[in-house]
Image 1 (tube, one colour):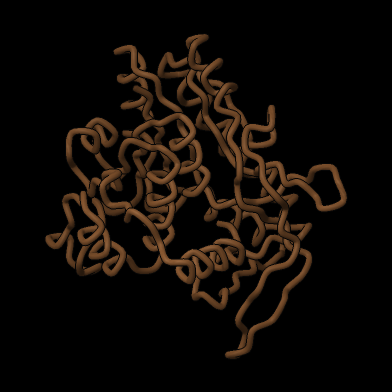
Image 2 (cartoon, helix red, strand yellow):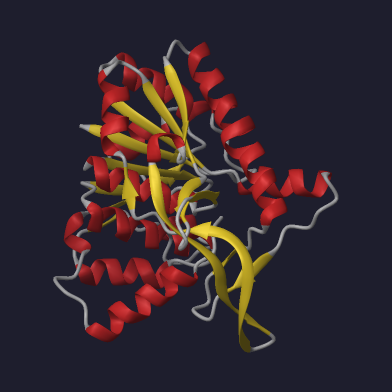
Length: 298
């Protein structure tokens, strides 16, 4: 069984325990695909260069980054450049033969580029053009499986490869949680999403209200109702992972000695395939598609 691990990019996330845990799992013969975020580092680099990060809200209420051409250049520099290389370097020092990959390598992560997004400004719906984002529609699972079969540990970063309407490709931003979800679904793997909290809480300010697991649509509805802020995207990504074929999704803290092993053993909030409803109404599908199309990336 393969485990896909997503390490969050928030400042409060310490990756050291997760990397040591990856090394232990690999030494035991487990296959691990590591993915990562990095929005905080991108924002800090933009500010160092005298540029202001731009965030927008979609009509569906989802807040995300607007990635113009200049921001995309910084994104490519920071994500597959510095952050991915730093993680590969750290794993090599832990005797893990890691290989860094971006979504553009071998068409690993591919989908349509979205150059314009619907946004809500001052209560009005508008179209904002010049975006470099996309929604992942396909994952080159063969590439990842070939790397794993060769005894290597993939470390995957967005950007993804965005197909242009007129032909050709452009590297574009994509949400890192949803990228991890797409990979976990394609590999039919467990997905462990490591963040700076120990799971999904019924009361976001009270860790004692952590939801241990959800295995039915009714239990998942309670999870969706509890998710706020950044956790909303993680729950959306979890649903996409399970719909795509992932065997489970666990949201857990990265700040533990063995966060991946702990998550797989039941710590955190575990979501199982049974949370998926049998079918959705036509209106619900249309609403979901609209939100997905509007969602700008990390």
